[in-house]
Image 1 (cartoon, rainbow, N blue to C red):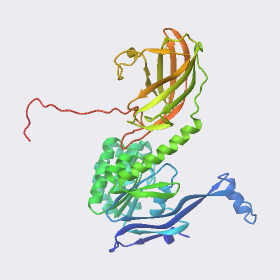
Image 2 (tube, rainbow, N blue to C red):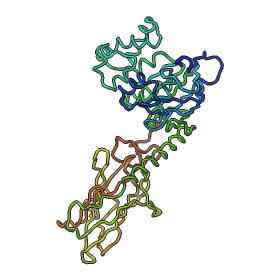
Image 3 (cartoon, one colour):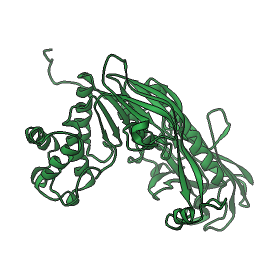
Image 4 (spheres, rainbow, N blue to C red):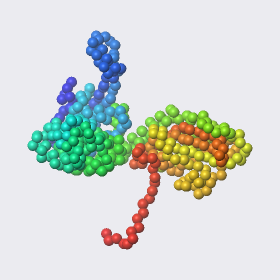
Length: 433
């Protein structure tokens, strides 16, 4: 089956839908060996043996996009978002179902597609424009605007291979925008640009939509989805799970991602109760995370109150005064977020105003309340030390794990923590408005 048999391109006409996806499915063959697998399948076609396993990337997906809509698609890596966009753009055939596209479509799916690495940026404008179906005269007329929008300076006359990923995104987006398409498909094209250019592209997308264009937009930046889109679709495991208002879909995706990450953490969450150093006169029996109702949890949302509960046993005399230190580390890169302590001296930015007098019994529980939890959307582990002056009774590393989930717009994985704040302005003189 050819791609032209699957993607039906119709004139704009009066039909309200710019894109219709009808019961579409897509399978891929996953070979054990990328080289010998297909060769063996060809040479031994008469055998019943299979040299691959079938992977269903898209599962009976149906969706529609109205003219003039900006529709966002969200979902985890491997959900099938890019495969779906490639089929809509006519770059991949479907195995089942059909896709109807009404209008002139431009797709910005990957950096480096439709350009030559040895050509300069200016030469690639001509090359890319020809691939998009523009005449040389049209490209020549549009080139100054493309160059101005891309803002590459002298690099516009240097080879494309010398560009950074952000510069490549600038040029490719500028070329794609120049055609004024009826339908624009964008797959993470704004992920590599700097914040200034991302805002510029977002405004260009909004202008396109206001002019009547239809935009299908994939991004892991949930803020962009809520800001740009009029409707959103959640895709997981090759299926459309939910569609609706962007804020509702973002909330649904956050809840889905939170549940999945907590399950992953739970699988490895058993605390490492091997003492790293210390006299051993104090030992940790368990380390758990509980919510405000006292129920054990493996994850919480940024901004919520959580309690980290330390159950201990001690061979010290009853009433021995100790200091307790609890440190937090981000698992993926080892980034140290900081520590809290019963000593006010080590907690100058906490809610404490004086030392907390901690005197141990033979056993008991120590609760450390984080109210609210400032750690952002990520996985964390703990360091714990209990001591008295220079004497360390116990030190533990990798003491338990937990996941902090995104709540609403809170949660940028490039930041270290979330800081709630309130702005107040007091002008020196009364302003005229």
